[in-house]
Amino acid sequence: MAGPLLELRDLRTQFFTPEGVVKAVDGVSLELHPGETLGIVGESGSGKSVTALSVMRLQRPGKIVGGEVRFKGRDLTKLSEVEMREIRGQEIAMIFQDPMTSLNPVFRTGWQVAEPVRLHSGWDKARAMGVAVSMLNKVGIPAPEKRARDYPHQFSGGMRQRAMIAMGLTTTPKVLIADEPTTALDVTIQAQILDLLRHVNREFGTATILITHNLGVVAGMCERVMVMYAGRIVESGPTVDVFAHPKHPYTWSLLRSIPRLDEDRHEPLKPIEGLPPDLINLPSGCAFHPRCQFKVERCSRDVPALTPVGDTQLAACWVTQSGVELKGA
Amino acid sequence: MITPLPIDAPATPSPVAPGRPARSYWQQATARLRRNRIGVASGLVLLFFVLVAVLSPLLAAIFTHTDPRSIDLLNTFLPPLSPHHILGTDDLGRDELTRMFYGAQVSMGIGFLAVGVALTIGAGVGLVAGYYGGLIDGLLMRFVDIILAVPAIFLFILMSILFKPNTITLALIIASVGWGSIARLVRGEVLSVRTRDFMMATSSLGASDFRLIFRHLLPNVLHVLIVFGSLYLGQVVLIEAALDFLGLGISPATPSWGNMLTNSETFFFHSSWLVIWPGVTIFVTVLAANLFGNAIRDAFDPRLR
Image 1: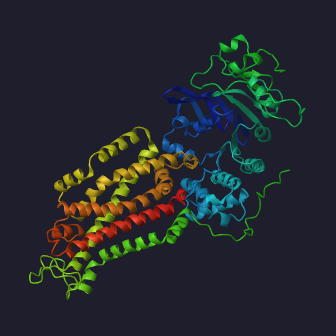
Image 2 (image 1 turned 180 degrees about the vertical axis):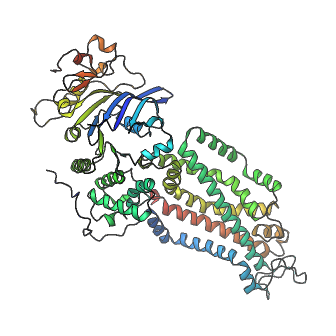
Image 3 (image 1 turned 90 degrees about the vertical axis):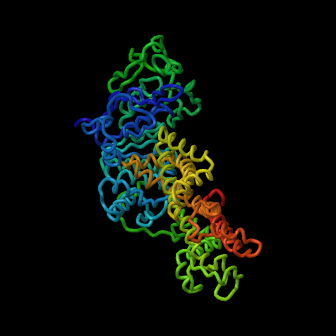
């Protein structure tokens, strides 16, 4: 396989607030290969969205203070704003969480779906609109010529998200970043949208980064998954392996805190004790150690690096790196 | 289970249930405005004065056959309904109706020009300040604070002395003070619109700041401008009349409703019509502008429905 399409190396994004420096993304490295679907999971505030926004350089008011975002051999963090605008929407597109507010209420939906085409190709309105209509058709919006003339408030939530996906794909980008694309939708619509994303991935060969806190979505969609905690990647590997044999206590705890259909239903769910850490005053050593039931003395002292644990996975944990199996009461 | 999406469905239009036609926010707002009788009436009154202003030479030629400056010392202080002088004449025998026609030119001209200039500057400053925030916002808004902290009448008097007032300079003088409040209003609105997801979504498409501000943000704050503009029109007419009345406005040779009032104040007890015509006209214009502004606000603000 050729080299990665998108590669993050030790990316650090920080927010400078009056209370102190928030290390929202604290040394994230990842690779995205052509056509693949990568999942990033983590709870609220773990830095998943800021990582995605940093790739697009839309992390304002945060600052990228270190690291590289390599795309097609160029470091996106070094590009000028004008060069970056060429990347945005044309090479890398993004889908946002809330389709109810992601469309501008004053413009007709078709006009907005056509906007990236007009921004990047210089085509006239009619030609761009033709692309928009055929794309609306592809994402499963009935009577696209008619619906293109409708305003966003005339669309349902699921249809707006379809329109957002259509908007992202009109320029056939290489990378699609979907930031919690199904969170604001109800369950049946979620399934439809995920199905659509799978189709899109297959038909256009677009590499997708799927950001979610929903482990079920990752299981169904992604070949590889990364788990983020407090701005760092704590575990990564093929989805099957990570879900079957988590090598980081956080992943392990996450998986035990959600209900499973294939296990004894009488066992109560086990929530993760404690709260996510304060990103201004991170705990010493491993950020997860105050909530970790496997912690050893070293965990509060040294920060573990992401190193191979087992055949296919990487984990940043002193306990599993020393060969201990995660088994819980 | 999940049925596969018709992703490869042919692009033939599928039958759609006939429903209400797509109506935009603007179409809905104008429909609401049309249902407001007071709003429509006051809008028509304003339109009437605008037409009078535009057509004043024509109206003078048809109805009064005279020039607003032609003096007739044999026919001074003619009462209303005199032959050839429907609204009477003033202390120099000039025809009141003709002067009222031409006065509309000054009032409406200054009114619309000042509103236009104030809205343009105010919207530009408010959009930029609200969009960029931080230092730019701080500097622009402190400048607005300074302008709004100085008594407006003092600024008007100062500038009227510095610049010889004619229709255009007077409009600019009034607008140079008025844009501050608009900038503040627009900035406040921008702050709330800016955080909406579609702004982020649009920048992720590769849109420039300029496009984001003027193509995406501006239409979302346009209702603020329209409402404020129509209310401000009444204020401008009033300010212009007040400046004329104080002798700081348009030169007395040019007829305006304001200086017609000034010229006639001394004759109030023996020729009250000379005060009544311009006074009532200013009153009606300002009232119409305010009522129209209220009607527009009611029509455009979804929260007031």
